[in-house]
Image 1 (cartoon, helix red, strand yellow):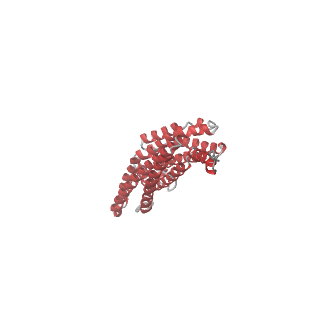
Image 2 (tube, rainbow, N blue to C red):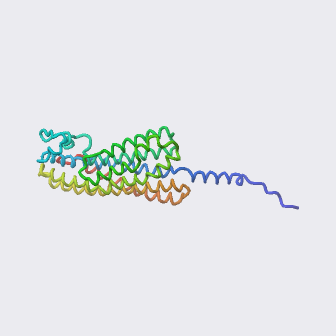
Length: 303
């Protein structure tokens, strides 16, 4: 008697479908990595604003001291110095807005956030019409950043202007990207400049702390009773700034993991392993910094 005919089982019918579903899911755009990076950077941007809020009063008093000095009039473009005040020295007396260095940092951080919004829209499949609006806003912010002046650090100012010009020329952004393939190329070509912006903030963090040091000396002269407290606060701000630069480095690592997942969507196991390691580290670090900011508060005592 011949062998019985073997009919395919339900499992045999479904196995190719399972394989197809698995392969298609592996080839999907990396939404998990994107969510991890965006969450990490959102936290970094939040603590960046907290750090800048704490540092701003120290930069302001430096401008105020300059306004009271013998060379104050030369800082006024119209030469119209009245009672230690002119428009160019306004940040020494204003209590809203940002002084120049803090403002440059905050705008740079905002530009990275705008790039992230475009990245999220691309991976979420948002229409090109809506994405183009964000591209135009990015172009506008970069244009404003490249014109930003008034920084004491010439090297830092030059670096920021260079970043704004390198990431993407305004004319290329507006109307220059017509489909998702071009947008993906734009994102992959410019992610290194975004990482450069994050490193730029970290590498030049000494400029922020320099203002804290000189500002502390000025505050101590005004309020002798708080000299010890102000010195202690200065050192705590130094630790805060140092920790903040670690968080910026964490964001760069997260960005690299995301870009690697876009370039190699099938490398699932190393992607998830790298993602877990960097996400946990980033979360712990930002929580520590958030507590430091809350403890320091703003404005500082004795100001």
